[in-house]
Amino acid sequence: GPHLAPQVATPSHVVRRLLKLARVGPHTTVYDLGSGDGRVCIEAVAGSGAQFAVGYELDASLVAAAERAERAMA
Image (cartoon, rainbow, N blue to C red; front, side, top):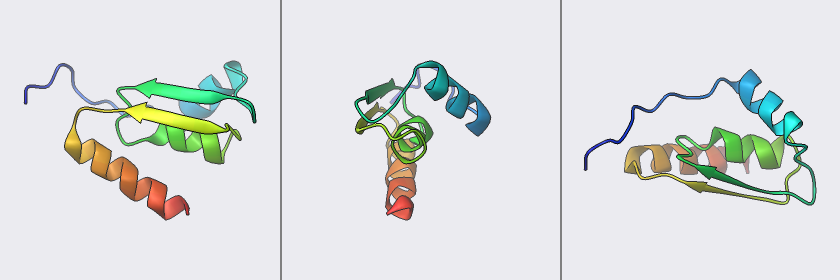
């Protein structure tokens, strides 16, 4: 399908900073719209201790990349 916007990955240091500013912790659920390769959701759970993270992505190739990254964390 048509792309609504180009995919631009958020740098890891920016992801960590935004999660810190949002005070993500053990009682937090993170939702990421346009989650791309899943880095925000993965960092929210693995790095910031979020209870749960949900990513929404339309691009199937990016969903596959996010799933691979999630499996690599296990």
